[in-house]
Each structure stands twice: as C-alpha cells, then as structure tokens.
Length: 168
Image (cartoon, rainbow, N blue to C red; front, side, top):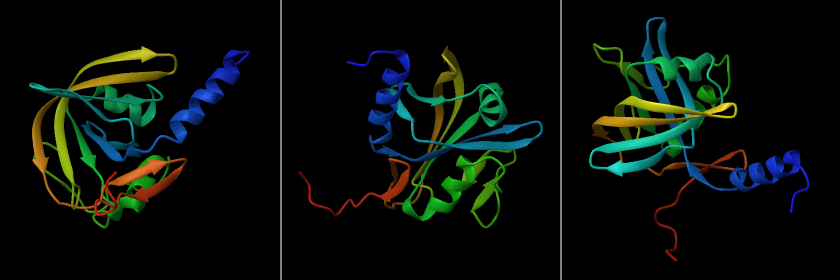
C-alpha cells in the first residue's frame, strides 16, 4: 500500500505506462487553423448512437483548442504513422504536412492518408478531473480506410501489432 498521494500517483502511472493501447491522432479545425494531438486513451462508449471517450492532460494549448472546437476527427494509426504520431505528441513539431499525408475537406476537417479509420464527431461533454479532462464525443461519421497493422504504445515506445501472431 502506498503511504502518500505521490507514491500512489507514481504506482498508478506505472500501471498505465505498461498497459498497451492503440494510437490515434485527434484533430479539430479552429479559426486559427487545424490542431491535433496524439492520444492513446480513445475508447468506445456506445455503439448506438456511436460515442467515444478520450482524455487530455490540459485545457490549454492544443488540448484547449480541441475542447473548444465544434467538430473533431479521430484518426486510427497504422505502423506506418510512427513519425506522424511523434510529431503530434511533441510541441513545436511540424504538423499537418503533405508529406505526412494530410488533406482537408471544404469544412477544414483533416483526413490522414493510410489511417485504419477516421471517426468524425462532436463533443457532447467534457469533465474536469484534476489537471485533465475526460471528453465524450458523439460520432456522426465513420470513414473506414486502409487495413494495416495498428500502431500501439506501451512504456513510452511505439509497437506494431501483429495480427498474424499466435492467438491465445
């Protein structure tokens, strides 16, 4: 048992740092241009009507812009998107480049070439929890795309999921 809040927090972070998760990029169109961040916290909430959740660690910067946006897109990454995932995970990196495979529709919604799927939605609610926000989004469009190996993140490292690996 942890004796204080700091020890409890460290133990909690270790559990989730070593819990593999699929990698996505959450994007939104804002008056000052597109914004986006890498997220491994996307989870389905309901199938009918479809809804997802994800968390962001701050309500400022890119995360704050996404929280204020009318619409958002969630791009499910393949193992070919490691460099793009890194660009959207670190402040100051170049984002939304043609080399990364981004295109935009007439409403400013981003599409990432080669993504396993893209979900388009609207934020229903966000709940502040400490210095993070849990976001619930209603999905209004599902855009299936490429079949590729999902990109996973575990213990600060990206991995390729091998769907041809041995089933348990």
